[in-house]
Image (cartoon, rainbow, N blue to C red; front, side, top):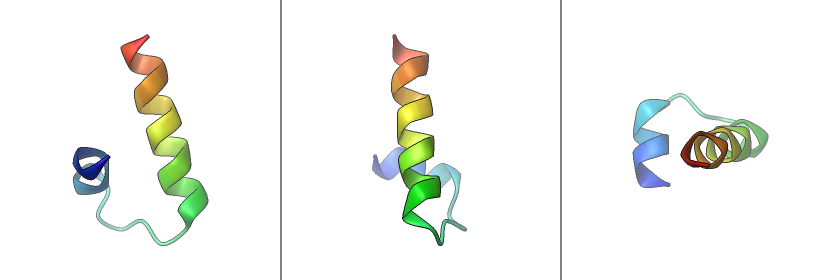
Length: 29
């Protein structure tokens, strides 16, 4: 998850971070 945060350091809304994580997980699938 830290790597994702590094990709988008301008995350202010938790929803955005959650969306990024979900997107990353789906990419792994």
